[in-house]
Amino acid sequence: MRKVKVLVLITAMDRGGAETMVMNYLRNIDREKVQMDFLVIRKYKSDYEDEIKQMGSNVYHLNPIFLKNIGRFKREFRKFLTEHREYTIIHSHLEERSYFPMKIAKKMGVPVRIVHAHSIPNDKGPKQWARLYMRNRLKGLYTHGFACSEKTAKWLFGNNMKNITIMNNAIDTEKFKANEKTGKKLRQQLKIDEKTLVVGHIGRFVKQKNQQFLIDIFKNVNNQRLNSKLLLIGGGKPKAEQKYKNEVMKKIKEQGLENKVKFLGVRDNIEELLQVMDVLVMPSTSEGFPVTLVEAQAAGVRCIASDRIDYKVNITDEIQYEDLESDAVDWANRIISFTNTELDAEEMNRKVKIAGFDVKEKAEELCNFYCNVAEDNKC
Image 1 (cartoon, one colour):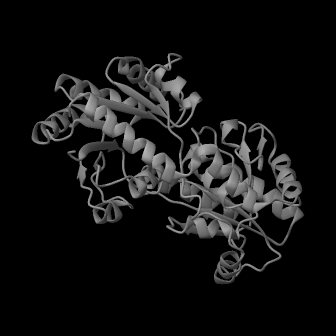
Image 2 (cartoon, one colour):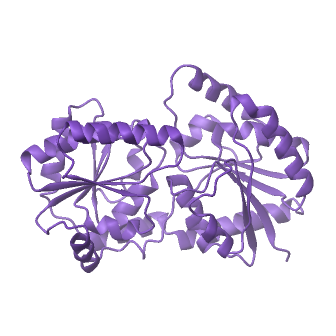
Image 3 (tube, one colour):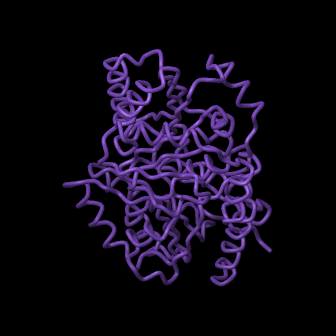
């Protein structure tokens, strides 16, 4: 049987949620049967690019899909498909922006065109109108829809779930098992004593992740527990993300929390850093099905999430939800009370695995899907 060649279309391969999920599948898929190559719509080198190439996959770059250069993107993408006829399956993670490449791919006869839904946007004004415009014109351009949850599927594809597959944001559950030794060692490295209450957050610095509000929350936690620290993990290359990060840093200084907050940047040892945390807090204004919350639960970490996040991500019953409209002090009170409860980290990991979030099993399913659709379409 010939190797199935899949072109993964994605914004960039940095350490974001969707990108990490894709990497989890790439690491575990049978690469003797499936070749996953990447077409990213950013010109810079992404965080995962070296690892992707080490596994034998190719990474290509195109210009972004921006309104001012949409014509240029279309020409480049059409040229790319003309030169790379080997890709008979395109798996797009561009959500509603998939409209532009999928329209071209359909015209050029690419037989299998998959669009993947990861989030539910909450933009307002022109940006939201543009999203709705692209989403409404996406219908009929894809052959299969994938989504991380039913909610994200319905936002992008509508209520008709025919040819829609719910694909879990799966992780390596074994890798994320709780490890007390690792936690103690990292606390020492970070100069955090064992009695300190550690609040963690993982995410890019964008308004959607709501780190500005998180600083208000932590300020109130610190008012009650003077021996507390906040770990901010994540970053981002675009100018907009750096601007928002600067705003967060300014707020930390205004609140007098410089010695209480640690910026750890983009890290490749999330499974270890989770062992340092007493609680992970995610006050996002919108999310799809955050892989970070799956990882945290597998690592035996309590989570506090905003009510805008899908309740189905609460696989272990160790996530508590707080109204995003609640005051920061209410969030802080919930954090304090939740961290005083007992939990069974081993049982949490087991629950994540049996709920269908172990990537080894899910990667086999994805491999079978690619192979079956390739055979059906004589690719």
